[in-house]
Length: 104
Image: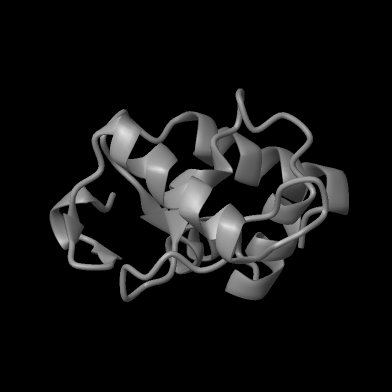
């Protein structure tokens, strides 16, 4: 397994490459990097540069939003912000979940 800093760099590079209007899943990132999806979530929660590495573009495998950490907190307000950012980016929704057509 890669060292911790290399894992973080790999995850952040994947984030940077997600196209406009698209999102991906914790599981897909985990598979590419060779780690557990929960560890992907932990890495994303420590993202100090969300404008460069858009962690809001990562959702659960069923399309539900999962978490979104802002200034160390995850709550209904931060999830609302995540949804708004996805919509502004052009990601399509099917009710409360990201539509499968928007997943890469």
